Length: 174
Image 1 (cartoon, rainbow, N blue to C red):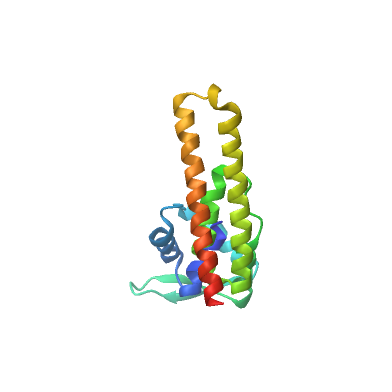
Image 2 (spheres, rainbow, N blue to C red):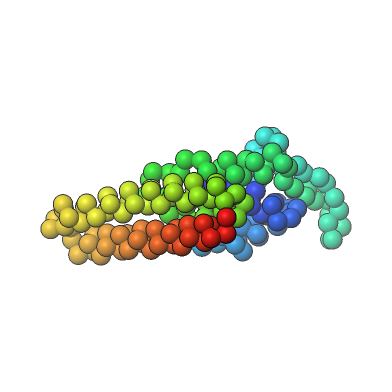
């Protein structure tokens, strides 16, 4: 997931490692807070794969800094990552899905259609699993479990509604 965030940042402009982290913090803080200890290895992996390049330059403060930029291979990798399998774990799904939706601008209309379909299908699976629990085991659940499960159903319903709005917008603009 971190690779998506880094490549998204570099689609906008070249950044230092610090600026990449700040970009992620500014745009994705509701979903994640990666440390430099996580960002540096991700940058190295992307550089080793040829997805980004690093050039050393003097920064405004007179310090030698590495400026990262995305390559054409990196642009393709971003699309590939956005369309790759998403976690089936409900705890991770919404966070990953929100990040992918936030970066959907980098995909073609056809690729966005595919992304929306996959995310909506998985959200429906998770919602139906939660509804099944509510129907089958509702009596056995305590008050707090019932409230949390009801909230999960609402979250998935709201998420599906968001995707349906994106689907309509995508169809209108293609």
